[in-house]
Length: 111
Image (tube, rainbow, N blue to C red; front, side):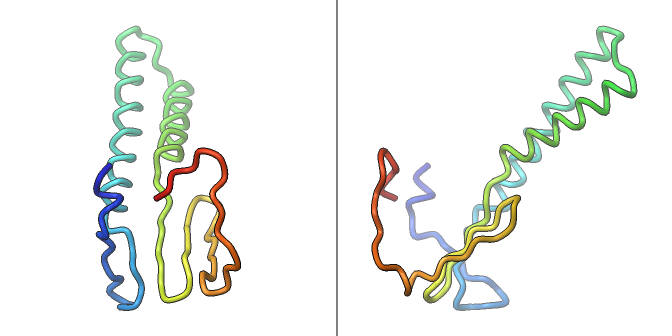
């Protein structure tokens, strides 16, 4: 987890004033590997018990897509005066130059 706290933001090739998370592709690839491993193992187990049908294979594939959705990381980019987070429901952008106050609620990490 130490790599998240390092100032390891790379710049975007198209926009040199934009910083992106250079580990996002690795994390997304790992999420895809986890979901494919889950689908493969559960289908293998179902096939070994002679219960694998086309409907059950479709169910396992949908559940594997759900695992991918859960593990897929959000994509964070930052530029001069703004911060953007792109997830499943779209992109949210905050203008950091227009912030009035920043507060910490509950047990949220300081970083």
